[in-house]
Length: 241
Image (cartoon, rainbow, N blue to C red):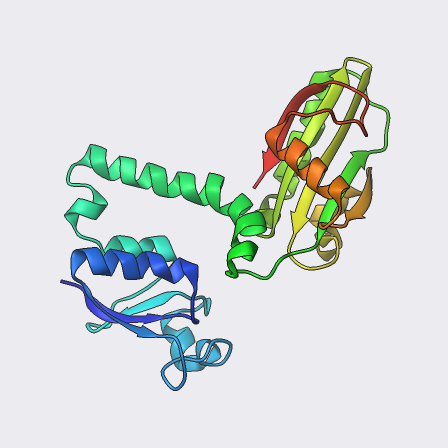
């Protein structure tokens, strides 16, 4: 049975995965989340810590036998038992399926909108609307513009969430969307690779407390509504996460 120490900062929800797995499996898990055992921003920058965890990320697990792991899903998997991992190849694949689903479909929007209300994360007020400022033609070409932009922004996925919609029909269409970023400025200027598309859009920072913002977020995330500011019918949408 696994036994070791989990390094993290207090109330790190990603560390809860490992703690829950250990509770169910009976693995012996010590938590190092406060001084002197661990101080986030200090301990994880020391040569000793980086020697075991080169990225300095937490949660990080070190077994009593010296075995080291980072990434919360991997740690939770290691600390689990057969019932949690799946007793057959099929069951194990289903476990992986739902873990991946949660990471890709649930956590991004939850991080932006639900976690702040629970006090898990600070509310991020950097909500922006974007509108494509150039003339569009065939809708399939317009849709490809969205897809291409998302592909070029691949490394931004952990720090942004967006719902971008194509409105209208051939030769009478428009693209606009809602973006949520970490921080208070547009992230595109941080990398030349991210600047290819963003200048083709008009950007406007929204007030998250305003009724306009609440309505737009509801409509863009649900892909339904009046979209009064657009004046064209919904055609199709794409999610960046």
